Structure formats: C-alpha cells, structure tokens
Image (cartoon, rainbow, N blue to C red; front, side, top):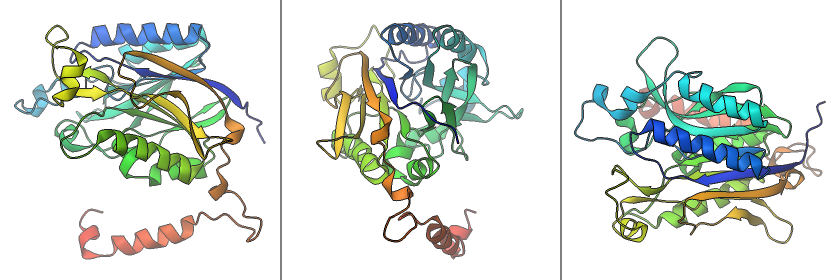
Length: 318
C-alpha cells in the first residue's frame, strides 16, 4: 500500500482573463506558476476557461465562436508551454481552456488541463456545462483524478461542484483528499452568488470531509481590457466575475475552515495555504465502527439510478 505525504502547499488564483487573447492569458498563467512555485506552492489552480475567456458570443454562429476557433488538443501548444514550467519547477498546475477532441472530430470541451513535474498529465472535460456554455461545448462523460505524492486529486468545474455533488462524492469515495474547482462565477440577478458559491463549497467539505481548492475569474466579462471601468462599477452592474478564490477544508476548532483566500477577495493575485491532509477524514466512506461497513452506500444509489433510467422520462436520455 502506497504511503502518501500529508502536508501540502496549495495556491489558487484570482485570475483576470482577457477575453479571446490566448497569448496574453497564457503569458500570465505562466507568470503566476513561476510566482507560486517560488513562494513554495506544490500545486496551483487557475479558473475555468482562464486560457481563452469564458463568455459566449450569442450572436455568432457556433463554428465561428472564439472558443471553437481557439480550441487545442491536449497535449498541444498551450499545455506543452505550461508543462515546460511545471517540469522545471516540480509543480502541478491546473487551468481552464477550450479543448479540441482528440478523436478527429470537431467536438470542443470546457476543460481543466493538468500539467505536473512529469509534463502534460491529461484533462477533465466538464460533465455539466451550464447555460450558454452549451452553445459551443460538448458534455464530458468521465471523471478525472491525477496521482500526486499527496494522493489522487479530483477535479470538477463550477456547475459540477455546486449542483451535482455526486462527482465530488465519487472522488472522495475513491480516495481523494483534495478536490479542485476551477470556476467562473459572479453577480446574478437571480441569486446572491456568494451564498451559492460559498454554500456549495462548504457543503462539499461537510459531506465529503475533504479539502477543496477553488479558483475564480476576476474582472470583466467579454470586454476588451482597455474598455472596462472600475471593478466596483463592473461588479455593481453584474458584468464581472467575483473572485473569491479560496482553499477550505475540515478544521480542528471548526467543522469547515477557510485556510486561504476569502469570498470577498476582489483583487487579482494568488492565495496560498499549507494544508494537513490528515484532517481529510473522508469519514462517510470508511468503516463505521458500529456497523462494520461505510455509511456511504453506492449499491443503493446504483439501484435508485437504475430505477430512474427505466422511467419514460429518463429513458429518452439514456
């Protein structure tokens, strides 16, 4: 049985994407990797679609949308450039980008690319694209966890994390003590985004008893970087991303502790925290001393989902 290290330095970035300017975004991603590595980070997490920019062009045909035009294979030019740094500094880096399917089709995915000390590791394709993302990207279909000296690390992207807790529970049940959440979230007329964001992260820690590193975009939506006003005005108008990148997990004096970052952090930059992964008890997935079996019951959940798939409504989607 492999013995993993327990003490880890994790960095998350409040990242200002320049929409459609892959060259600028890649240069700053590389700069943050250097800075985080020099500060002692073992892993650095960037937001959803940090390489390209998040927002959809609603009045543009699909094949002409920016994310479609800029999509790359993995490995590809951008991941290879990042991997040169992660190999040089012995660090792991995860960043959001548009990925072109490697099967020869024209499918494009909202992806979290993973690079590490050994080079390009792979990618997680977002299983639950949200809202206008679906105008350019396909649904992913597989979880993705990558091996590190601290154990396997799982990844979900934004909507995956807040609305579909099955994915995080799968990772925790599989042995992950750390979950990464590249996200793109900000003000909404429909709800208080901070409650939605922080509440979703806290529920993940509460249910799975693991650590979460969440990295969010900051600043304008689909606006040239020279056209934006003050960030306060942008946020007030509901046009920007909210920042609030953070590292949280089980604590000793409190059930859920924020180790680095803050939900109200609006400035660009990175936050780093040293975490002790022995606090990630994953209690629900271990043997209960009274019953002699875990509280988590995948056999029951499988049965329930199989019943759903036999109903007329769900059968049409399977």
